[in-house]
Image (tube, rainbow, N blue to C red; front, side, top):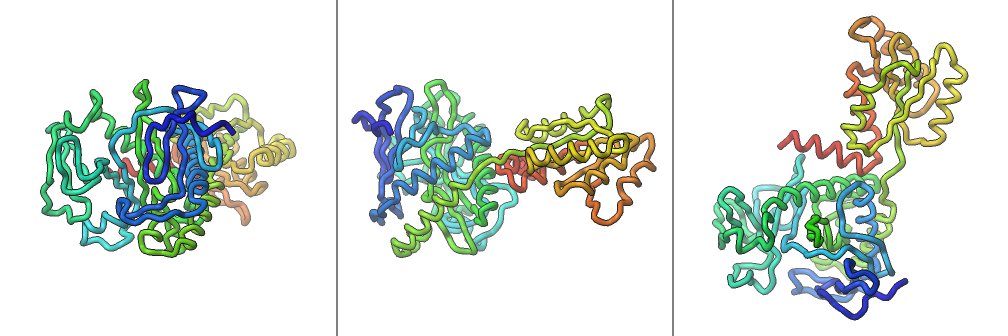
Length: 426
């Protein structure tokens, strides 16, 4: 392991130190501490081993997000308590994403019950402040809730622990007093989108491990080139996660839980996040001949998955070469077990049911000539027992159905499909 840093400390907070990399001027090293705090530092303890557990959790999360194509400030883990990241200028915002109503949200909206579900993620912004000051302004509280009005060119600040209904902002600032960069207002849409994508990816990863991610806080930074990165850390202080109705996160500490119970939860979360991954998956498009045009399905898979899922073509007549076809099917599934097959067949509509009877992976059949010969669909619909083939007439719907099956175990793909769905709910 390389040294943590060359003695140049760039910033230090309650739970971490950021230092200059000794080998790369464009890189920083983030070192975690064993400190745990709550109530903006009013409650403070040392939790033995927390630095290592927090570092491992953050690195596990960032590796997953990076694999999902999300721009994150993370390069590699350097030691049990440190990792390297691209140097960037942190923006003074905390971005909170909520799937359920917990914490301060309940104080702002007292009419909601704890755990109220938001089918479309909520994204909130808070201005990061210290000692109730923002530049020359005295504030009513630290880290106020923000409302940005791009049309008016203003930022309104509210107390996050009081009901928002009927509350007037305690301070309204012109954009120029908040934004340090030209055109910074455009970053809010980009931060919101990236934060939502990160949450959705982590949400599915937790679902696969039996947990429920209900909210999460992230921060952003700008590289010298102007690239926006999801930066800082995402550790067990950054979110609320429920398992069998009980919190696994820092909420246990906030609520006065014993330190050994808090430590056990942090260790458990570090272990669970070590399982986070994007699996190797694919869709096989099966046709009866190399001359068959399967491009409608190929294009739909590429568009709907954003290129996350590869599609491969197998052209083999199940009627003319049944033995070779079944052998090829078995070999393909052996190579990559997390596979869905789309049988895009014209006159050979029986291929889908035959493939389905010979494998345990899902098979979706598309009667390609349905418009010309609608009666052909019956060979795919009326099947004997133990032939669970799914018949879909529209190629793009068949592609979406296949992707939704794979998304059950793929956090990156789930993020892509769920984001599209939630955009329709806006």
